[in-house]
Image (cartoon, rainbow, N blue to C red; front, side):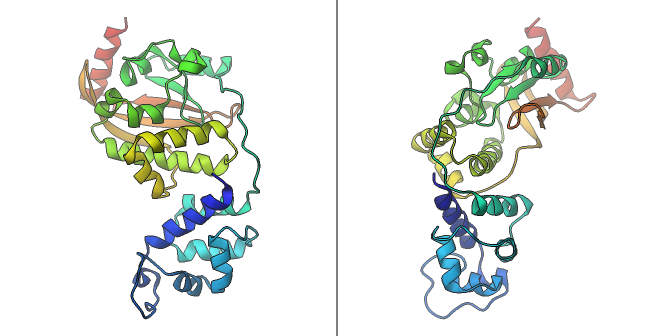
Length: 281
């Protein structure tokens, strides 16, 4: 998706979620045909001309100053992640789509992953491809997938694809909707950083075609990195457990993360992980 289109859709989506009273303005007269603030009302709050904001939202201007962008971010009540996303979209210049080489986990990252022997750990690429996992992560998150699949680029599990299209993964997350929102929010942020990534665009296109739920969440333009969160899992072998998934940036491989899954010390979930460990020897 072109940068100008992303910027246009993001501004429209964020404008639609605000009411005039939320922004502290008197509603303009006349019947409101669409939800949220009108362009004129947002321009008033942000202190810019209506014609200038209209050009910006229509993708006809990508040279907005930082001051204007900050004023719009404040008027739209954007959080820190959304504000950064707005600045990023407004500053990017169109570039041709390209298909980058397949990602891989380098040996040092694999060594780091293996050091988490008592906890599930996996290396995840920027498009949510699983680049490597330890046996416990495989058993916890995708025991129905071949253990060596991450080593074969054409067969690699993709966490976003599995979440929306794989029944096993959908059943694993008891709070599937919350996990889905987190994954889409992270993908939206990555797409803003890498609009030229043809493989990422293909993944988003595939999910949009095959999953109405993804399409609805993608259209909301939520922007939020996946950093750490806790989820209730319903594992087919060991039953229910609550885990925290923490995503650690890998300095030597920008865009990749080391995802470590932990449980509260002394909890029943910790015992459940220990039980799962017995299944893999």
